[in-house]
Image (cartoon, rainbow, N blue to C red):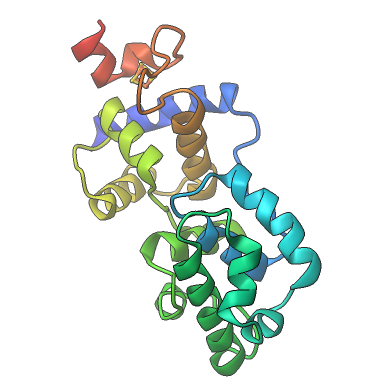
Length: 213
Ligand code: SF4
């Protein structure tokens, strides 16, 4: 583990130099808005979600507002997002549960968060780490790809990847690390044609050594 821990620290240090603001690109004003934005972001870009929520949150702001909407009303507002029908259903149902079971407050524990419709392990982790600054480590498709290419992990399972990254980066700020790896995957180590030639990590990278070195 020591070798991979050192690799992790080196990666963190180098990424901090090129990604100077490792925070979420979703726009939100409170934990409830973040929850709605994260549910909308499945299979949809953050840019698109921000365009939708900019208008949506002008009209509807609280779980009470969303709990009182019909599915059709919400669909109309979010229809430019993929899977808007399911997302509308889940947002309304999650809002109702927040109102009825959690006093109108987004719950703070993983166990409670995943009881909300539309909230799986990753979404719960995002809310925990971004809104509540807890030590959760959401793994999305970018983080899974980057972590495998770099040789931090060797798995196709997001759950295994999450567990191993938490071990590798134990004691460090998971929120910062999550965003460093995510933004690096989104803008540099992209799925098709990663920008390897100019990559600050290429001398450390397993993928680069195997395919381009
Ligand atoms: S060298 Fe290429 S594959 Fe490796 S981390 Fe950099 S961009 Fe990604």
